Image: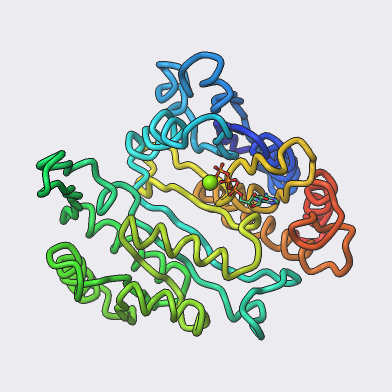
Length: 358
Ligand code: ATP
Ligand code: MG
């Protein structure tokens, strides 16, 4: 039997509440599919930072590197500035483990009310591939002429050929793997003078190497509008760090509740562990009440299985999730989906649905 070593970081707030149902689902799917998991639990969080002054211990990255994947809940605490959790843990993990792909499915699930009128499951079902290590999010730049009339700032974007090509290539490979050979590129070459024309150039070069894949390119402003007006026209969308970041919140927003969507930070070469998490944060406003929706975390576990090379087990979890969201009435839904279920009730319903999802 294959045993995967999983680093589990529940984090803060509802991160700690949604992790338990996700692990229950993994254990059950493991029994059904003949896979097992060895979990290492790490209590690294903003609460740890408040107590000790660091998010993770000095050998934290070494310890994580001994695992096949990382399952993360959410980090964030009302009295701790966001940059602490970002720079103290999340960014080191993404950068040191070269998780250069941020992958998010945008899929409307049955039974989840869609904010876009008239849309049904099947109308919204595509993938966003975001560059996760360079681009607009750089520390290069700074202030000049401070205090004078001429004061200003410069923020520099960095697009290397290696960084640009590898994210675009990933999008093309994904489109092929999904059997949906169509990649859309997010650009803004009519406004950004250097970076986006280069992005377009690399996108065209890659397209030439994948003649079987249809391509189109959209300026980011009209692309946002097209997401909302014609979500059915997309299969795989690739964007830079900034554009991908914005689109990958717009996407889940279009599909009902952000509590359902997962997010994967992937090192495709599997040289380092990849990290899987829900899109939502620690939601301090509802933490401790036992009403957080566990589906985003459970779906993140499904993406993790897919990455580990267990697509059948991953698909089984997704079918179980869909069975639960499609169930009419309020009993299995958490309040954000209009129901009365607790985190545990909703999670247990997914576990139960796995039996039928085999
Ligand atoms: P953080 O700073 O950690 O990102 P946040 O409050 O800024 O936390 P989210 O945690 O993403 O942002 O939550 C935004 C809102 O969405 C929350 O106020 C919460 O009510 C709701 N929400 C988020 N996740 C869930 C969930 N899993 N179940 C139910 N509601 C959720
Ligand atoms: Mg937030």
